[in-house]
Length: 174
Figure 1 (cartoon, one colour):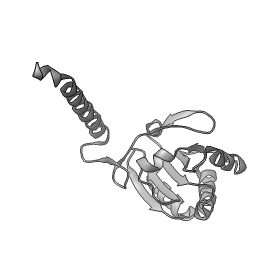
Figure 2: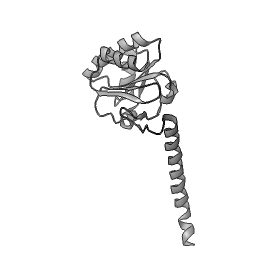
Figure 3: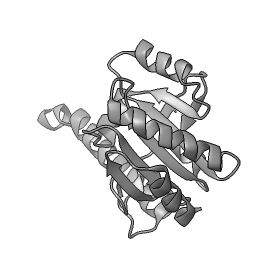
Figure 4: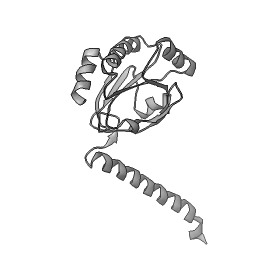
């Protein structure tokens, strides 16, 4: 009788271990055995789902085969506003190519993030999602992450990255 009491928790633990093994195994098979999933250069980018301000849902993995620029920012951050100007120039220069820009507002308030989107007429993908900052270990804003066509993070910077720096990096991975 005592052994049956532990059967439920044991099944849950074993099931969780199997799911974790499959998840990690699939990640390794997608990116190759030598690429660890993570949030820093050289890591396969952690996949996530989100909905943009137009109501369209995405997964980061939807953009495999393209270069992805993630911009973590807030509307009240002076450095973010400067960098956002550089992102606008990047968007204009690469809008018809294989670059996807995703701006992730980590405002405390959804309305402030949406107001920024409207007032700045942001034409690329923009979302409000504070949990993505935690997922990606973003502690400073602005933070820029560039992901190559294979889903591997190639660049990460906390602070202002200029148009010239961004375009040189993007050209390297396009």
